[in-house]
Length: 259
Ligand SMILES: Nc1ncnc2c1ncn2[C@@H]1O[C@H](COP(=O)(O)OP(=O)(O)OP(=O)(O)O)[C@@H](O)[C@H]1O
Ligand SMILES: Cc1ncsc1CCO
Ligand SMILES: [Mg+2]
Image 1 (cartoon, rainbow, N blue to C red):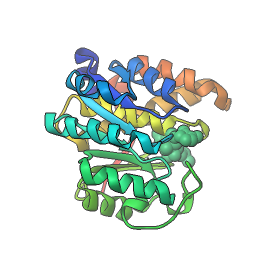
Image 2 (cartoon, rainbow, N blue to C red):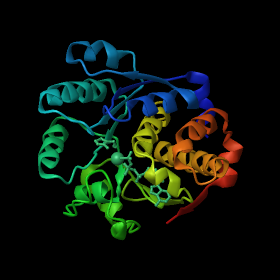
Image 3 (cartoon, helix red, strand yellow):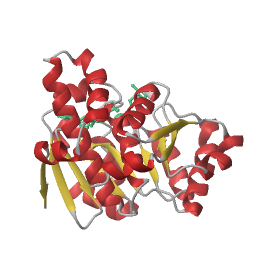
C-alpha cells in the first residue's frame, strides 16, 4: 500500500487549483501526509515543477490567458517524467471542450479524474451534465470510462456513488456510501489532489488511482459516521480522517471489486 510511502516521503504536489476549492485541496494533501504547493504564475513554473513529484491541473475556474501556463506546466512535467493529473471540471461545455482539446494536444495526462458526465466526454459522448455536477443516470457503466481510458491513454478515475478506476484494460469499482461527499463542493477536486499524492510515489498510476479512491471512500465513510447527516461539518471531519486513517482501516472499510 502506498499511503505509508507518502507519509514517509512527503512528496511535493504542484497544483493549478480552481479558486473555489483550493484551500480544501491544499489541506487534504497536507493532512494525508504529502506537501501541497499552489501556483498560477507562468514565470515560476519551470522552477516549481523541478522540485515537484506530481502536477495536478484543475480547470474549474479556467481563463484563456492561463492556457500557456498550463501547457508549460504539463510539458515540463512530461519531460521530467513526473505524473500529470487532469481534473476536467465541466469539460462538456463547448468552450471548455475546446480548451481541453488544445491542452491535450500539447500535454500527455497520466490520470484524468472526473464525474460521470466529464468522463463520458472523453469517450465522445455529448452529455453536458449540469455545470460541475454529473447526470447520475449515466453513472455506473464501466464501458464508458474504459473507452475514455483507451482514447486518452490515461488512467481514468470516474467518481459517483460507485467510482470506476480503469486503464482501459483492467477496471475496478469502488462502492461508496457517502452521499454527504456529493453535496460538498470540492470533494472531487480534493480527490484529484489525493491522486496526485499517490501517483507521486509510484509509476503504477492505475494502482495510485485505485488506492487514492479507496482512501477517499473510507475516510469519507468514517467522517460521515461522525457528523450525523450534517453535511456542513463533513469537510473538517474528512480532514481529520485523512490525517488519522490507517491502511488497515482502508482495507477493512473499502468495498472494491475488480471486473
Ligand atoms: N451519489 C454519491 N454517493 C456516494 N458518494 C458519492 C456520490 N457522488 C459522489 N460521491 C463521492 O464524492 C467524491 C467526489 O465525487 P464527485 O463525482 O462528486 O466529483 P465532482 O463532481 O468532480 O465534485 P466537485 O466538482 O464538487 O469537486 C468522490 O469520492 C465520490 O466517490
Ligand atoms: C463550483 C465550481 N465552479 C467552478 S469550479 C467549482 C468547484 C467544483 O469543482
Ligand atoms: Mg469536479
